[in-house]
Image (cartoon, rainbow, N blue to C red; front, top):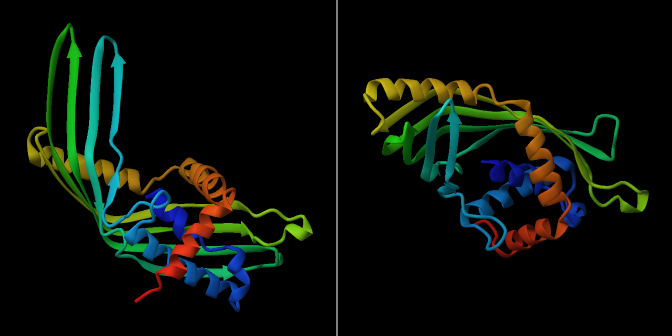
Length: 239
C-alpha cells in the first residue's frame, strides 16, 4: 500500500512542472499518470498493483520456553485501483515556494487473500496448522496532509523536500473468512475485530516512515525515478 500512496502523492512533480497553468492541474495530471503506471507496472521501478502482490510476512517469538511461529504467504490485494479522489485541495498559504495538499483517497471495497501457517513448540513438542484467509475492507478512506517544497528552485537555494505528511485511516466495516485456524465463527470474528481496530488506529509512526523512506529517500532524492515515471506516462497516454 505504501508504494501506491508514495506514487500518488510524491510523483506529482517534475522538471515538467512549468507546462501546467496551476498547482491543481499539476496534481491531477500526475495522479492520473501514476494510476496508469501502477496499473501496468514499470520494469525495475513500479510493480503492477492490479492486483498487488504483498511480500510474505513471518515472525517468530520465544516466551517462557514457548516458541511461536506465524507466517502469511501468497498475499494479494485486489481492487486497489478502484479508488476515488474525494478531496485534493491544493493551497500555497503564505509560502509560494511550497505546496500544501489536503487529500482523501476512498476505496468502496478492498479485498485481500492469502495463506497462513502457524506453529508453537514447548518441551520439544510441536503443534501447528495452516489455512487460507480472505479479508474485505469496506468503505476505506486514507486522508491527511501532504506538505512539499516545490522543485525547480535550486537557483534560489531551495531544495525539494517533503516537510510534512500525515496519514489517517477509517474503515467502516470488515468481513473475514479464515479457514484452518479453528472454529470459523470464532476466528472470523476475532480477525474482523483485530483488523478493524488496527486499520482505524494507524500509528503516526507509519506516516513518518513513509515520509522519509518512501517519499524523500526513494522518490525525491532520486529525481531520475520521477523522470522515468513521467517519460513512461508521456509514452503511454490515456486511451
